[in-house]
Amino acid sequence: MKKTGFIAIVGRPNAGKSTILNRLLGEKVAIVSNKPQTTRTKITGILTKGENQFVFLDTPGMHNPRTKLGRRMIKSISSAISQVDAAILVADASYPPGQIEKNFIERFNENKMPLILALNKTDNTNFAGVAKTVSEYAALSEYAAVVPTCAIKNEGIDTLLDEAAKLLYEGEWIFAPDELTDQPERKIASEIIREKLLRLLDNEIPHGCAVVIEEFKEEGKLLRIRAEIFCEKASHKRIIIGKNGDMLKKIGSYARSDMESFFGVKIFLDLWVKVKENWRESDFIINDFGIKDEEQE
Ligand SMILES: Nc1nc2c(ncn2[C@@H]2O[C@H](COP(=O)(O)OP(=O)(O)OP(=O)(O)O)[C@@H](O)[C@H]2O)c(=O)[nH]1
Ligand SMILES: [Mg+2]
Image (cartoon, rainbow, N blue to C red; front, side, top):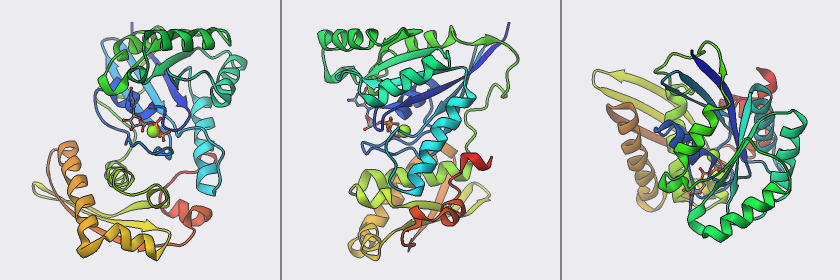
């Protein structure tokens, strides 16, 4: 009997949601960085295994938005929650529940939605530390399951998947068994570039960057990609390009290598940097950059 279900992955910024999604799928579909607010939109990751089809929705980290872009990110969390049958709340195993976690728990309880708690980053604490956090969460609510995970070491992920499988319902699959994500190839390419910006540059700069793919063309065994990196200030543009273009070369070479392994072909990557002041406050430009507004769907 086939089973399926939509499961949102939610939590505060930097909790490890996207790392967990990638681990659950066994493939990297969501970019990861050590900076909060890495994920900007909801990302669907599909896993079909045996009779089960899991549809996971990775979401941006919950925070108080300060820009229109931020508000759009928060909307995509609500949109994801409204679509799903169950959720995985990813929280840090070293800390007691904070307001963000409490709000999520309350929201899921109100909607009578099954909630799995993934206490991630267990490598930063010890058994007693995890047990303490588990009891602090247990005092708040009941959960479908509580699973300690260490996503970077791939620990606890099988258990998380087994627990998620218990929440699926009998029904026809929605996606083809080999489908992995709803993100178009161009989006994956632009996200890979944004990941390198997040990893190589200081906080303020990549948070003000958007990447737009201007050309995505297969030429025999080569994929030709031209991308424009939009940043908010001329001073940021200078830093992104770097001395003698060194930084841009580095961004390009890391991105190209990831793209080659994802797409399985040789990539010719051409990167340009442009300035678009205050774009994070312009609905028009945010739309133009292809960052979805969930209410427009
Ligand atoms: N020590 C440790 N670090 C982890 C673990 N899981 C993820 N991380 C790191 O935590 C950071 C954030 O991971 P992400 O997966 O991008 O977190 P996120 O919750 O998706 O973050 P946002 O998209 O910004 O909301 C990255 O540097 C990861 O490598 C873990 O189990 N242990
Ligand atoms: Mg993320």
